[in-house]
Image (cartoon, rainbow, N blue to C red; front, top):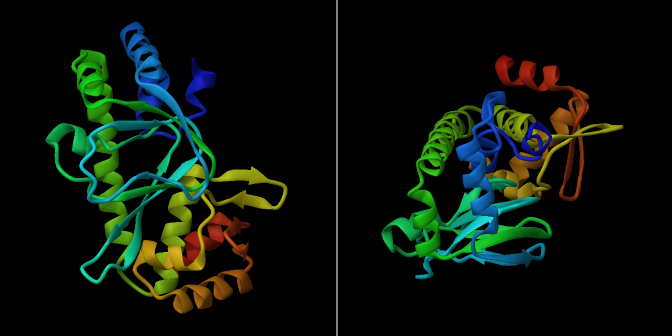
Length: 238
């Protein structure tokens, strides 16, 4: 059970159902098994739209591996990256609850596998006590993450905001490599800018500063952290 839990980041629905905080529950295990059998299996390729903003469909997706990017559009039609979804997350549940149009577009950041679950089956699954409790904890984690990001990603100099964003994704999803910690998913400079509300050119300048300090190295859709303490120090000092 613990080995399976390690495959999903903290706070995701499948992390909760796999025995969050090292605890095991037979009812949660049954709920997890039922969820992984629900609906149908589906694969999305990198760049493929999984959920479309404004669409009226109501199915739910459970992400089994990889990452997805959540974007919204403003009144002028400009898109902005607003969130990252990781393996274990559930997506599209708001439409399933309220029959409202999709509030955002979700796009596969890489080749991903999901369970595509109908509104009826999702609501039926959620009615189970263990399922409902796990989902409630997931929502609480999402809310805390959103508040933290809104506070740290939108205030202060671009360099500070970028440090906080890189730290956030690295601490949640970073993968250790011989060079350091690879930040996942891979984002373009423009997407980093959307994530922290900054222009792409300002992000490029901030990345150059971080590289000069030996904190990171980067390339196209690739960012490697070489020193978490350096990032934290820069974020506090500026």
